[in-house]
Every structure is written in C-alpha cells, then in structure tokens.
Amino acid sequence: MGKGILTVLGSGTSQGVPVIACKCDTCKSSHFKDKRTRSSVLIQVEDQQFVIDTGPDFRQQMLREQVEFLNGVIFTHEHKDHVAGLDDIRAFNHKQNEAMKVYATNPVRDALHREYHYIFSEVYYPGTPKILIQDIDNTPFKLTPTFELTPISVLHYKMPVLGYRMGDLTYITDAKTISESETNKVKGSKILIVNALHFFPHISHFNLEEALTFIEIIKPEVAYLTHISHLFGKHKDIEKLLPKGVRVAHDGLKLNFNY
Image (cartoon, rainbow, N blue to C red; front, side, top):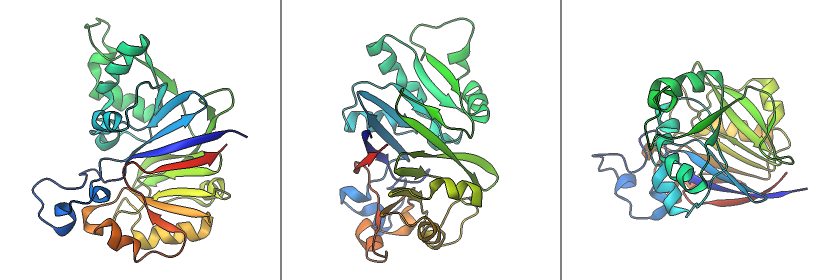
C-alpha cells in the first residue's frame, strides 16, 4: 500500500473569496481560512507531484506551496476557473526541460485548443507552453506504475465533470447530479472532499443540504466541503453548523491518504 499527500490549493468558487468589490463580513474577514482561491488540489505520491485543475490562481498557489516541480496536470472540466492558469506551466517547462503531461477528456482538449490556440500552433513561438495531451475518459488511468486515478462522472448542470478517486480518498468538485453507478464508485472512501456552494439551491452545484445527503450515502470517516462561496459565511461559522465528521476545507489543508 502506498501513501500520498493531498494539499487543497484552492477551496473557493469561480469568483474566489474575497469577491471583488464585495463588503460582506466574509469578504472583509482577515482570517486566513476565509481567503479562498479557485478550486484545485496538489497530489504528492512517491517522488512525483500532480495538480488537479489550473485555475486563475495557479501561479499564486504554486508559489504559496513552494512547488518546485510538477509531473502532470489533470483536469476536471473546461470552465475558466479550472483551466485559466495553464499558461503558467511554462515555468515548469523551463525548469524541467520537457513538455507537461495534461490529462483531459475530449471536451476539455477542445476547449484548450480554443483558449490556448498558440500552444497548438504549427509555428512555435519561443516561450510558449509545451504540453502533451493524454486522452482520458470515465475509465481508470495510471499516473505512475502504482498510482491510479478512478474518474467519477458527475453533472455540473448539463456539463460532464470528472471527480477522482485515489485509493481511500475521493475529490469531487462542481457536482449537482451524481448517478447511482458513479456514487457506488465513491463508496468505501475514508476521506471525501465534495463541493458545497452555500445554503441555497443552485442550478449547477450542491448546496449544503445536498452535500450532506451525499456524504451520508458515502459514509466516509471524514468529509470536507470545498468550492465555497462567500455567501456561505465565514469558515468558523460554517463549521458550527456541521455534523460530526464533516469539516470545511481551506486553502493549504493537507490530508494523508492511502492507495
């Protein structure tokens, strides 16, 4: 059995927290747990490191966690708050002198071609990011000879999104609907990280009630809420409302898992 570390790079929504021009109590909070960059995680296994999603805060997250090398990028879906930082993998290209492996479904690959057309240009421009697309779908794939990710297919309103199970930990963001068959793939996870936007119903995200219902189905030893809106409130106030075994993720949170 292998051991890994997952670091929550970002635990906020597409707007982040604080939100530009907002003067609510959450956005005015000075507590570090209320400073939420866009959702992403870092996975450390064996001697390798991978990130799931590169949002607009990717550069800031890499500097904060002092990440000096990266072996690959895995995407959940193609929305801007999950792909907008890809250009900054140039620093790793330069230091490692190699292209970055990018694991993406067909829709994500197509979006990257649109958003980063210059990466795929036939005429190379010096300094352009170098990537190697690794096609994935809803079947398990290996990042190392001994470390495998199992995709969990969810719907973000009508958009397909992939969560990922890695051994006894499952990470799911931007979920509103999860089928029974995909839910069964999550069962047995000891650690569950799942999105919970705020208290109110939302067209494309779990609210708190829906997240807690899903957690109760999975019954992990511990669950963490992520992709959190400023409308949810301050970290300390949310935690007071949660049942035993459910916590609020925050930027910089580190979790040990087995695979």
